[in-house]
Image 1 (cartoon, helix red, strand yellow):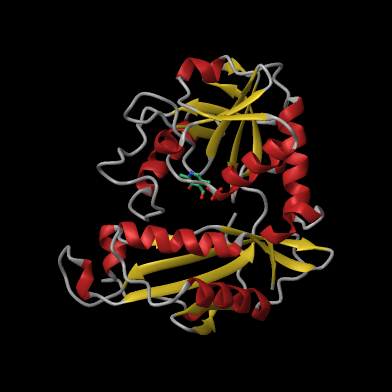
Image 2 (cartoon, rainbow, N blue to C red):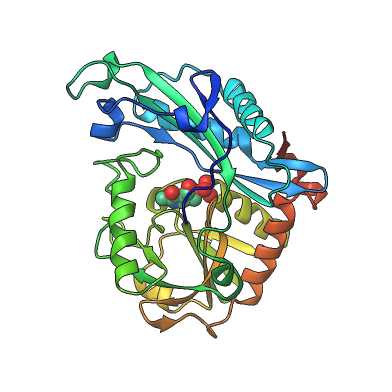
Length: 309
Ligand SMILES: Cc1ncc(COP(=O)(O)O)c(C=O)c1O
């Protein structure tokens, strides 16, 4: 489905018409993948549009910038305000689910690998976008296949930073499993344990315990991952961060992905092995229901996650 166009996109401090939000073909990041970005959700709530953990996303953008030595010209607070301004100016209040894409990249100046002589440019786009892995996936679970592509090695291209270059790895895995007839990929990391999806963190439930790969093996430190772990803990479930072997994933009672785009999507099959009963499990459903309510500002405890425009 093509992106649903809105009116304006924030570029380097000003709102420009959607159709004019263009860059030069010699933009450094277009050639070398030197950009960093975020994916953020906006939700329609009873109190207006709320952006889920907007400040935490902009903090992560700053952390990605630090890893790739990019000098971001805007503070977290300025980026938060710019995002709210973008959402407000596009009159997106009627849409139940929004997606917001901040991108920081090196513009057009010099040829060559060193990006540090090129200007850092920042854009923020906001548009309506439904759930990434489909309504049916959210309700009934998806079919996942381990990719033959390994997750990027942390000493080659750190998966802890949300870099444009790193996403070619995700794109290869995604294309591979879609062509094979599955819904989403699962990555094994170079250490040999389960890492994450191309755009999601991974969880299993075994014997009533919620388990997700520990930070070093997990890849991206997902904001949804952390939110779901907090919710699980508050609901009284035992939560563990530890390495997950591929066979542990097959033997899970329940499994699911978390991510800004995917929200909380149950997994019903991994490599043609049915997970548990093949239906979303009790813990998965409880966490999903609580997460959705939290994102829509319906739970007081998690209201601080909701940043109203
Ligand atoms: C590779 C990868 N892992 C995990 C996630 C989940 O992170 P978050 O919950 O912060 O969106 C994402 C999505 O941003 C991702 O691209």
